[in-house]
Image 1 (tube, helix red, strand yellow):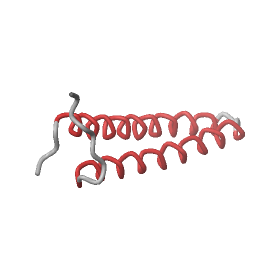
Image 2 (cartoon, helix red, strand yellow):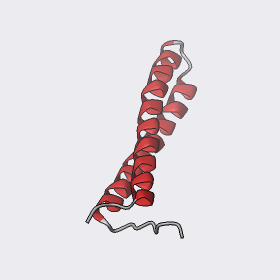
Image 3 (tube, one colour):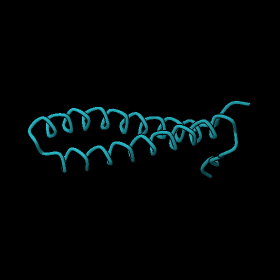
Image 4 (cartoon, helix red, strand yellow):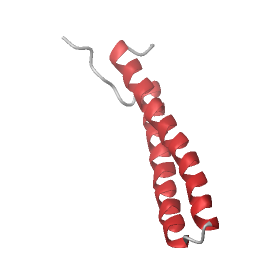
Length: 79
Protein backbone atom coordinates (compact mmCIF):
# COMPACT_ATOMS: atom_id res chain seq x y z
CA UNK A 1 0.00 0.00 0.00
CA UNK A 2 1.34 3.42 -0.93
CA UNK A 3 1.65 6.49 1.22
CA UNK A 4 -1.20 8.95 1.48
CA UNK A 5 -0.57 12.62 0.66
CA UNK A 6 0.13 13.72 4.28
CA UNK A 7 2.60 10.85 4.69
CA UNK A 8 4.29 11.69 1.40
CA UNK A 9 4.59 15.31 2.55
CA UNK A 10 6.00 14.24 5.91
CA UNK A 11 8.56 11.95 4.29
CA UNK A 12 9.58 14.66 1.83
CA UNK A 13 9.89 17.25 4.62
CA UNK A 14 12.01 14.94 6.78
CA UNK A 15 14.30 14.17 3.87
CA UNK A 16 14.52 17.85 2.99
CA UNK A 17 15.52 18.91 6.50
CA UNK A 18 18.06 16.06 6.65
CA UNK A 19 19.52 17.29 3.37
CA UNK A 20 19.69 20.85 4.71
CA UNK A 21 21.56 19.62 7.78
CA UNK A 22 24.03 17.74 5.59
CA UNK A 23 24.66 20.82 3.43
CA UNK A 24 25.06 22.98 6.55
CA UNK A 25 27.58 20.55 8.01
CA UNK A 26 29.65 20.72 4.81
CA UNK A 27 29.64 24.52 4.91
CA UNK A 28 30.50 24.54 8.61
CA UNK A 29 33.43 22.21 7.91
CA UNK A 30 34.86 24.81 5.53
CA UNK A 31 34.44 27.50 8.17
CA UNK A 32 36.07 25.30 10.82
CA UNK A 33 39.03 24.65 8.55
CA UNK A 34 39.51 28.38 7.94
CA UNK A 35 39.21 29.12 11.66
CA UNK A 36 41.80 26.47 12.44
CA UNK A 37 44.19 27.76 9.78
CA UNK A 38 43.78 31.27 11.21
CA UNK A 39 44.83 29.96 14.63
CA UNK A 40 41.36 30.08 16.15
CA UNK A 41 41.29 26.50 17.40
CA UNK A 42 38.64 27.00 20.12
CA UNK A 43 36.10 28.22 17.53
CA UNK A 44 37.14 25.48 15.10
CA UNK A 45 36.51 22.86 17.79
CA UNK A 46 33.13 24.40 18.68
CA UNK A 47 32.11 24.27 15.04
CA UNK A 48 33.24 20.64 14.82
CA UNK A 49 30.95 19.80 17.76
CA UNK A 50 28.07 21.47 15.91
CA UNK A 51 28.87 19.37 12.84
CA UNK A 52 28.68 16.20 14.91
CA UNK A 53 25.26 17.21 16.22
CA UNK A 54 24.07 18.01 12.69
CA UNK A 55 25.23 14.62 11.41
CA UNK A 56 23.44 12.82 14.25
CA UNK A 57 20.25 14.80 13.61
CA UNK A 58 20.51 14.11 9.87
CA UNK A 59 20.74 10.38 10.56
CA UNK A 60 17.77 10.52 12.93
CA UNK A 61 15.58 12.39 10.43
CA UNK A 62 16.55 9.97 7.66
CA UNK A 63 15.56 7.08 9.91
CA UNK A 64 12.20 8.75 10.58
CA UNK A 65 11.65 9.15 6.84
CA UNK A 66 12.42 5.44 6.42
CA UNK A 67 9.85 4.64 9.12
CA UNK A 68 7.24 6.73 7.29
CA UNK A 69 8.01 4.86 4.05
CA UNK A 70 7.72 1.50 5.88
CA UNK A 71 4.37 2.50 7.38
CA UNK A 72 5.57 2.54 11.01
CA UNK A 73 4.85 6.27 11.26
CA UNK A 74 1.42 7.16 9.95
CA UNK A 75 -0.05 10.58 9.36
CA UNK A 76 -3.80 10.68 9.01
CA UNK A 77 -5.53 12.35 6.10
CA UNK A 78 -7.14 15.65 7.10
CA UNK A 79 -10.89 15.44 7.53
